[in-house]
Image (cartoon, rainbow, N blue to C red; front, side):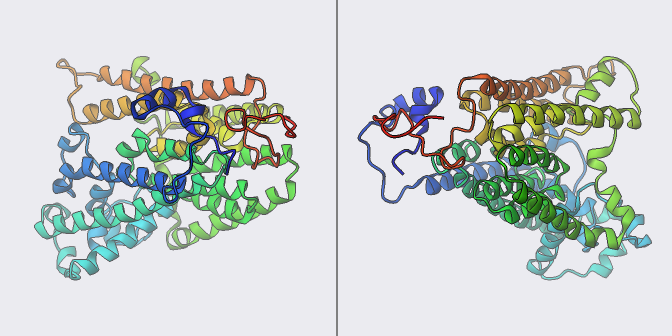
Length: 475
């Protein structure tokens, strides 16, 4: 496509970095016959995912064990720990009311879709491992199961199987993002080469939610409301952060007079969410409710509420935190809706505002939640500089959190580890930076969606088409 925007000409940071390899793309540069944007982005994503798994390798030998050493080493993974802690070593169904299972293992704090994926990975692990005798294992104490050498080997297999599935989801997300904006396929490289992708994707199952977000963006851009709705429903059953995208979607639909598509999308999303949750709820309604506790408990690590609680030397009740968070999220989504109706910001930019603002006031703010924001920010934030500033805050918070949980930041005299507060502040400032970047974009001239294909115009780009105003009316 002759009017494709290249980042070395469109982004100041990329332009300066391109000097190392000869400078920005030239006016008469041709296209490589094989290295298309899709293939380059998939290669970048493969490298990022591989680096992320290598970074977690030192902790795989302690899979299933307790202790804080893995946190201090910054290579912990909830996936490897879940094999024993959630009963996968005994193939326990995550949503069961069996008293024998619940006496040994508490119900997990993972929403239905991640729980299904983990359970399926456990079944594959047991087949690959030669189907160990579970009756004997169930007769042992859980502490003995956790230190069994065979269980350790199985936990490593479980982590590898899960990693393969998550990596496939990450590659799918990268490919979908390439196709969201045909003029700007290289925007997807900001997702594929993101530092937070390298650092956080093997920690939990949140990359599944990121893939669902990419599916929403792709389906809406390609006028396939059924695809967008199915992705939204699955994403909401993976992480409630995905559900807040409903507000930007409705705003964009109203603004673009796509009400019928919005209704179709919403109906499919609701149906998909119900179907995805049905096996869990029908198996055990109490375990299903518990599965959402990771997002609905009191002030937790990374959240502004933990900062208020510790710095203010006060004890905030769970009800207070949840009520205040709900009010603030609702108010912020109202602001996002107003911005969306008064400007022509694209869906990705509005989604960035919605999810980033929600993360600022959410009572639960695990580092991996940044993965849900990443596909939106990659397409919705105009400059790589702003993306890197936000991710620097996330990376600093991840490091400080690991040292906090690993006991390295504990003061000699006891009390709260105040050094960790700087990690929380860095995370909040990073989110505020990306929100500000999008809002400033909304204030600039021509702040609407600059993708000609997505909004149905044939608008030339002045850096690509020398005759930019020759027969191309600029809106």
